[in-house]
Image (cartoon, rainbow, N blue to C red):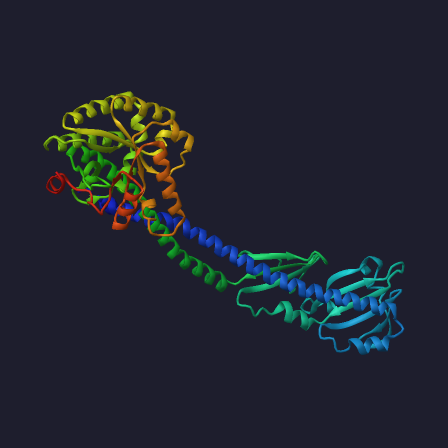
Length: 499
């Protein structure tokens, strides 16, 4: 019997979850190891540079001591006293014509070094030297050759114990060892200038020697574990973010599909918010507002599904749905008298002739039941030449035009003056300033004054207090709409309360 691999038996959701966890991990974990490598390399570099600078300081000081001794070779006793207790110096020797004449350790002397100090050997520089030819006693020598004089100058021999303390013993647990190379020789003598693990090589720009510092296995392991463990929370955060983003995308796509189905299943319904006369507070109009009762998610707000409909190019279909549903709802009620019905129409709807024809047909049917159809548009439509042309055509056919949310856009006054419309709707954000000292308070009065000069009726939205009612009435704003009078109502509630 064939057995299916366990992974193939996993559900799609389980596989997706594993992908969300593993994909960030396979990216973040290698990145964390790279950062660990960089961190180790930076530490090694800092250590190498620190040791390099220490050695450079010693070499520089010894060069100065050599130069000072060469200027006054006759003061051997003084030289001996000055340098006798220098911890890093084994011995400084002054040489004239191949003869050692002064030692910081032994004082005045006469020692023939011509067999050792040939011209080519006496060049200035820093070298490694095996005392008595013994590599175990290898130390550093700083040679300063005297200009224009064969086999003359001074050389300072660094105390071997000083080098052992500085380079031979590594107390830092980050390092396995430090190896120095001067020319062809290395220190310590039993090492080679090679490493098969993480290391850093630093070369002195002043004296040309190089240092190789090698990371200890403990340090490498510690850093790798630290960065590896640190990558887990980051990977988890990325997994959660990725899961949230993908879930949002899937939900959005799923919601878009649900919206298409909802339109077919008549899940979307209309509510109607009354618009009243500011002087008599009697019903003069309605604004149709669409709502969506999702079968599993419940009531979905318009600010969620309307932008979704725009992205999915369903907004014109929804506009047709609103017109059809509003006509069906209101035909069931006795004839109205002078009521206008506001329908929000998106810019794209006005760009197609068939939609304009549809609006005109609906307007005739609404007139048969005593309702005047009002197309509510935003300032964007009147900024568009095609949109303005469509509004002119609709108005000629008897459809009223209302500019919605006026003052929140960027419409030029010249454009407003060239556009014929019937209602100017004042946005709630300006109505809220009544009784409050804000910048928008002056804007409200300016909008009202503009409406009067344009000789159009004004509708104030979002009216919620008695003070707002009194103020707007006193300013001769014709119509009021808001929770002070009524929230948006479903058809049956509208019949009972207002009709």
